[in-house]
Length: 290
Length: 203
Image (cartoon, rainbow over all chains, first blue to last red; front, side, top):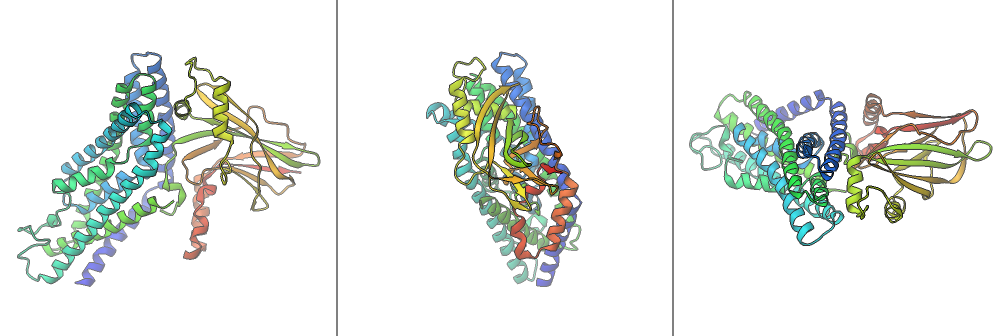
């Protein structure tokens, strides 16, 4: 049994390493940074247009922020790690993951709007303190929450593995409550509770770019326009994360082909939970370190 | 994952930097001239965070300039302005900014200043490297050619070498291959390998 487990984990890692090697990270990063620079300047131009009373300004700004959201998401970030990991390990369908992806990006935009709306307008906290607050408290909080989700994945994977190796018959299926044993037996992300945890861990940390768009818009007496622009930015981010989720689901299906029977499926699912859980924790912790 | 610090963050602030060199007699490099031109969005952010342009005429006044320069050139302890001078393979100590100025051009704030070397250095045919980079890559610097740089002594040459991904990639890969696990920390500050640089030679 342990041999099988070891082989499964090695198989997953080998695929991951192969994919990692093929992807031209430098070129992608260069392209992403160039795009971000372009659209960052476009956002500034659109914001100045709004200040000057340009009627097209809203649409220019929303297009620029949407594109910025997409390109910014290409860089390393907290949302992708979790969305990608979840789509690999969870039993959720692509449709469900897509909805979660969009909701988490939108929730992130809403956090930015509430943060600026509440702290900047009501408490009159300056924008420099606002970004300090985000970077000092909310960013680490988000990584801690994401690491905690990684720990839950490891716990579920380990529990599942324990059950597979101790229940010889397939009568119970894995992890208690499922009767027809299937790939989705480790039911991560299929519950509302899991979904809320995922969305909250991403949304707790707003993008500093979004905060600045809101604050600058507010300075130009166009806070509502700023809100629209930030929602557009969230949609742009969601489009990229959607690609990550789709790749994750595709990879999960691909790995699933390696299983000969239900038990193999469960073993793979447990192994994916453990591997992804450790990966998420490792990345979150490395982001937390100075 | 082997990119270390470079992948840890993505840039939020883009800076077009210009460099210049001021020599004393006998090819002694005394001072480096630096200017940073911020992207348009960062310029708006600076206007907001520093509460510049209170009269909303779109121009900087003296009070605005003082505020900007305080933040840009009164560096906290330990911060070296993301400016690194390499002489004979060693990081060469630099002083603090002098003769700082700020202007607003085409919706971009540009800060310029002089940075004296702790001791003048005689430049010969062995190149001296000037690199501008943020180890955390929150600031992305691009070195652009200066509009009017101070005249270099005869026989001296300053050449901008833009970051070339394949070269940097192979350097880091070679290093990774050559180093044992315990030495990995040494290349954590990989920003240097991904930055533009100016190569200065004389004679």
